[in-house]
Image 1: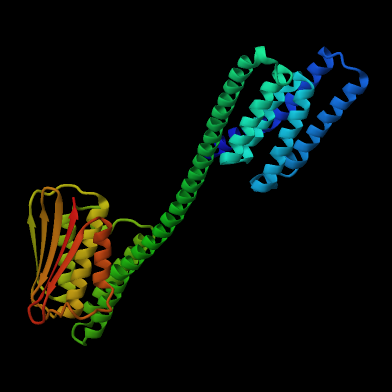
Image 2: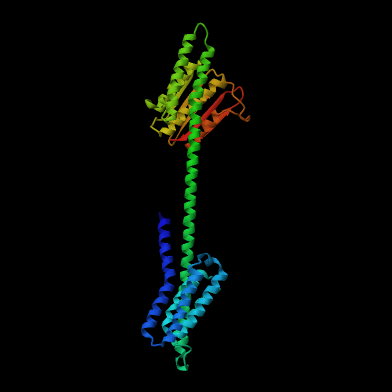
Amino acid sequence: MDMVVLDRWERRLTFLAHAIPYFVLTATTVIYSIFTAHSASERWVTYGLVAFGYAWMAWWFTLHPQWRNRMGLMTVFVAGLVVFYAVLGMREHWFGAVSYAVYVYASEVLRGRRMFFAVGLTAVLATLSLFGGYPPAEARPAFWLLMMVFVVVACTFTFVGHVTTEQSRQRKELLEENEGLHAQLLVQAHEAGVQDERHRMAGEIHDTLAQGLAGIITQLSAASSSDWERRVAVAAELARANLAEARRSVHALRPPALDSAALPEALDEVASGWSTVNGVPVSMTLTGSVRVMHPEVEVALLRTAQEALSNVAKHAAASRVGLTLSYMEDVVTLDVRDDGVGFDLTRPSSGFGLPAMRHRVHRLSGALSVESEPGAGTAISARVPA
């Protein structure tokens, strides 16, 4: 919105500045026609000069705006305008105000010495026009004093106008750059949101559907003639639970374990269910004072526990698993330990589990650490701000 307002005001001021030369030349011509008693032939010569001035400004500046950045052409334009003003101003002092036209154009299209030379020379011509030419000896002190004042004032105001114009241009470029950066940030934020949603969906699929399918396959593969009914019932229950999880994942809802229980109870429920399915005892330990946390924090810790337990079931061959949830002053930690086979942390892994856990925790400005070595079990610790 600021950029639109700035552009609107800039267009108005630019139009006004470009209209001033035509207005001044028109106003002085009207004054000349009313208050000067020249002959018809002299008047027509003056009108011809005025028409030349209109045509010169229109051709070089108004009708060809693409020439305004070409210093050579603009030097010719301003030089012709100075000559035009010298002839017209010396012919009739009423046209002294036309010097404003030169000041406007010189400050806009010239730079450096050329600008100050054109403005200073025009101020000298304005003084000569005011005195009707170079004055006699008795008026020369006043002439030189007034000329010095004209030159200093004209150069000063031209310089101020030039600096103001440059600052306005720089501010506009800065605003345009800021708008470009803002648009770029919006695009990046959108892309980051899309990527984050992909990570979320991938994590949800891995944490729920993949684990559920693995559990179903395990149950059906282990079924025998003596316990197939129990195995099929467990597999069916896993299928129903994972169907509900899939629906919740699509709608970005909280896990069902957190819908009706606090995080410690939800973790205990998950651990108990996992222990029932996998036949491995799980101990749950709680330290610190339980408090309500942001839903994303609770979901991240619950999903981390589910993923860690899934990894234990698939890789650890553990006989015991321990979960510890610790509430501290400004952080909460979840530790999952097993006494399984462990693994070598220096060897690269192609699995999705650990990267998914790290992504969940890092999204919350937390940290995930993993300790393991072959034959010594594994310990995973998630630490997030509470």
